[in-house]
Length: 251
Image 1 (cartoon, rainbow, N blue to C red):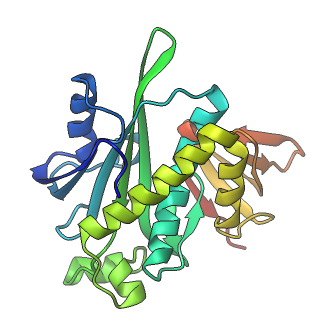
Image 2: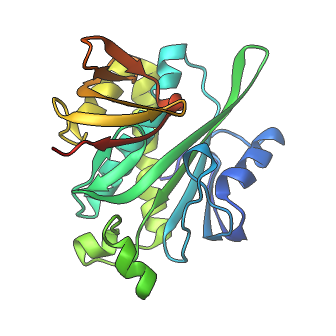
């Protein structure tokens, strides 16, 4: 059963996050959820474009959280856990790369984009945007993309409909959102760590606030920030909202 609010299927939209943000301002209830057949202006973090070919999952979920600051910071990680678990239910061994990538091995299966609107010092609503690759593309572009991306069909040999994938993600989101409200962020952070990519103790670089920083990845703290041990011995906390990319450093 879908959470209260309902799941609506749209045709072609600029992005499901854009549409749902407007619905939220007009008073749409919590757990209103939209999927679209096509996005003409899908985007990831910092406004970067997100390829949106027909057949993949483009899902946005409206939340109106009454949560403390630490719990709010856990929402992007919570969404990642929900997507990873939903992907696993279809047979894909998904892991999470901080801050928002869903991976299988070294290839990207999906991503999460969380956008909040606030006024008067409080959060009015949060839109959780999720992109998940369901189908393997064909053609010249696809050959190049397969170096960096993958899909549920490529990983499992199964054909998964967008509606089924959306319902699986919503079910896991609802479960973890309830746990977050009852137990606080510790359970979400523990679940995220259990399915994160095994990069801890390895040398990485992260682009944060436009600056490239290298160091040893030491995990995430209780607020979900990346802990990076720099060469000068200082541990740097990198907030997910400031980070653009994270990758391993070879050599």
